[in-house]
Amino acid sequence: MARMPSAERRRQLTEAAIRAMTRDGVPRTTTRSIAAEAGVSLSVFHYCFDSKQALIESVIETITGHYVTVVKEAIRPKATLRETIGAGFQAYWDHVSANPGEHMLTYELTQYALRQPGFEHLARRQYELYSATYAELIEQLRHSMNFELRVPVPVLARYLAAMTDGLTLNFLVLGDDAAWADILDTITDHVAGLVRDEAPAAT
Image 1 (cartoon, one colour):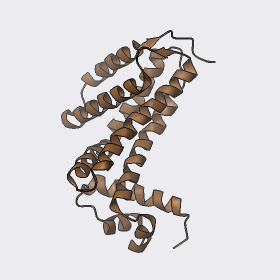
Image 2: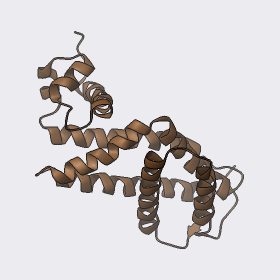
Image 3: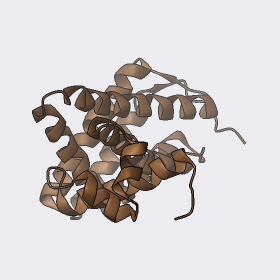
Image 4: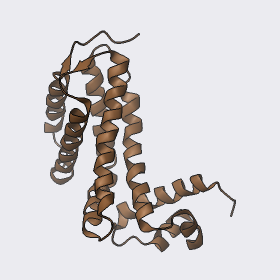
């Protein structure tokens, strides 16, 4: 087996864990099954991760990174702020629609962490990461399009995290129908309404 840098090996094992957990569920996924999924020995797994807690935290951060990447690309300034915000929500929603199992896994990870003694902090870390991610995206958009908000960034970030969390769970339970486009439009209008003193998009 070719030697691989430790950080790259951790990424490989994390992606393998996401696939295995999405397919088999968190409780039924073992370190052995993750190593097999990645095509490495069990000793390689234990070299990269010294605990299941460390693995789960890496899985949470990686899944979040998957959709943040596409949203960051989508919210490059458009002709209007509303159009830019709408593009960001649509990019997130497209990721949910294309990867429902991965998003379902995030809820399972939360419940697993809350029920497993000693893992509770991972659930808190997961939701703190959601809010921090939205704060980063808001600041990126605010600086690129030069506007002020009617509410503090941390408040809006936590609101958006809670709103998309609930909306995603509704989709996973109820499935896809024509209502979601109207719901996304409503959310876009609401968030755009929280902006004060919008300036023209940067060119």
